[in-house]
Length: 392
Image 1 (cartoon, one colour):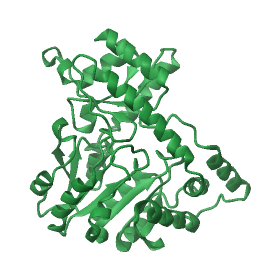
Image 2: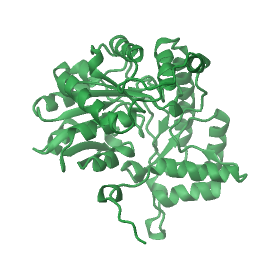
Image 3: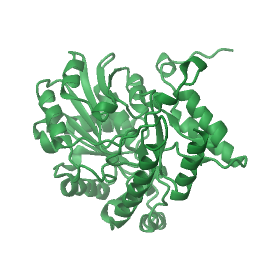
């Protein structure tokens, strides 16, 4: 029997990063010496003080439903975080805690978009943006950026992409997959364009904010264009910053009517995020931030080694990243389309021949590239470069 499925589900695809990581994990479990550079997940353990807070929450019986939008102490900590780190002021009714930053973005898309409303997404993009827009019955408008512009959307490109149907611009800085961050002048120029188009909302995905080493201190779009305050949603979370990917806590702050609509959508889907994880996130935001600085320093050390080595390999070009834990080298010179060597085939080749898992650039809308995630030991990175150099 053929069971009919909704068209909205059939128009999207599974996450390619999770699929590749799952295959790499299966190969590793079978005994192969896989070096997994595919999944964007810190290799550090969640700091002990955060785990201790979760254990204490269990002992204190914090195991019941919470408010849909999160416990008040966590929301207060988020308000303080935005004020201290980002110089942005929000009230409690302007904050929503969700099951990860992805959930926050999905809630916003569901709350804002009408069928066929357009969402501008600069490419390279995080793999989930276009598919989440499609699930919300919107239309992704992909704007291609390239190596020469450091993969950053220009004001002219933004202006050209805006139509009467445009409802949202998604801006991710520092970026997954490129590691590039917009600096103040670039954000100001984009803000000037947006001011001319009052129907356009902005979703600012700041999830990698704390793992930044260039263009510091971190600058948000609202810091340079505060007039966009009433039509900008700022999204963040604890997953990347505190090595808490599995805890599934993200948060968003923005206009109170939008947050209320997102809360309504969340109330009929997941309801509240995990109560224990919320208390862990509270400890993360309120505790010693030295762990974040230590992780960022390690990422930068790995970045400096990896990007330096990649740029000595024949046919490989790689821009230095401003932050995150990603490198996004251009490897098109190694492809042979006549023999079927695309970025997908290249990724398969690395996994089959070298036991190295990476993600092909087409997953991010940039098939000339591959994404390498350096959330692994320096020893593993040295070995990966050695294998790649010998093979090339």
